[in-house]
Image (cartoon, rainbow, N blue to C red; front, side):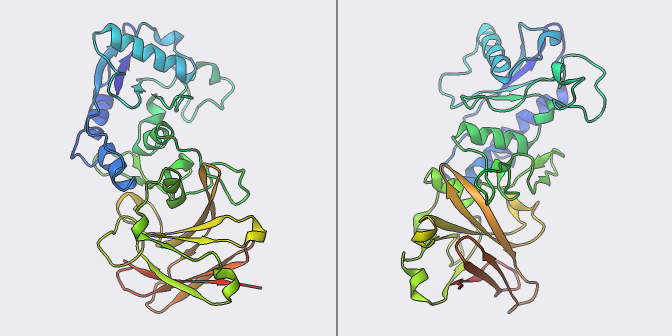
Length: 329
């Protein structure tokens, strides 16, 4: 993490406080976020914040591509006598301004033709390094871009083409059900989806319910219980994989139960989310909202595989749901 100020300008104490605290172990910030949503696969407790670092770049010259901004940050940090590369997975360059000059109207961004030439490009570059001007100063934005650094790609929709289509996964960028973190008043969440985690083998296989490949031809109802991935102490699976019919392309359904708790507390309700994998990413297909009354049932049918997913509320605290899956004519 490199806190960068432009040549001749000062740093920003609020930005410094935000990033130093978010990347401090035990603060309830990015370190805990990545540990939790990766199911323990990611440990970034050794992260370090450098700065303020003065760039060899004036603000008026800063409307550059993200990779050029990050290169400038790394070069300045090295010039200051620090090594931001050795021992670190990726680099994040934090900047103090969204534009290379003052006067931008509220809401202006790269899509505004009058202000696009002055916009500081903030996102992950092709190497997974992150440029973070103020429009990127949130747990949700930084978490999404760090996801690229870990090799994750954007979520897709059911058409397997439309990006940012899963509001309950961090890899849909800012088109997600985030929440406002009470400590820093910036957006955080949601978590990484089950099929996304599966692309990196960041799941707990012994806690995943896997259905036999011939389940569709058996003409029976397949039932099991699910708990959220964050609730690993209760006796239930935290994900389920069901093969689709081979004639439909031989892909798998990935089922996950998500509740509005923890890093997912921006969700509006508890729901079963039905997804699939597409290449090296996840694709959102649909969802079933958990009914409000114990014994209540709700369902949704996925059209391409002709499968009905039914959810039954079995506990008042919603820690576990019962799922029934049926092949429909």
